Image (cartoon, rainbow, N blue to C red; front, side, top):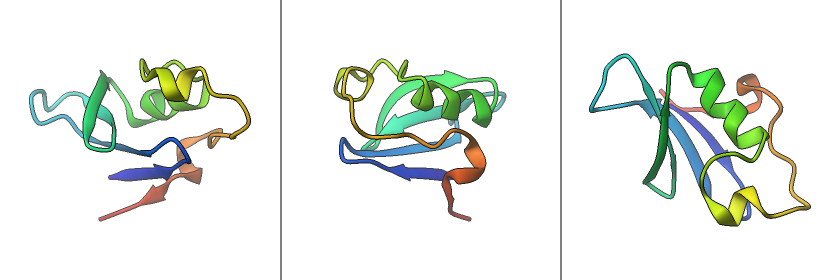
Length: 74
């Protein structure tokens, strides 16, 4: 599982329990979207196209530019 802690909330990327071929992007435990790869989910956060209004429209806080900058949990 990957984690990015922002002022808006904590984003997580992990396996999608409904579809083993996908990865889910959540904020605060709330599902936002599912993606084919973990990198695409992280890119959605960086590009501010997550579907979470508070993050997508907020300026001033930088998101990691790639998944390798996210915290990892085993």
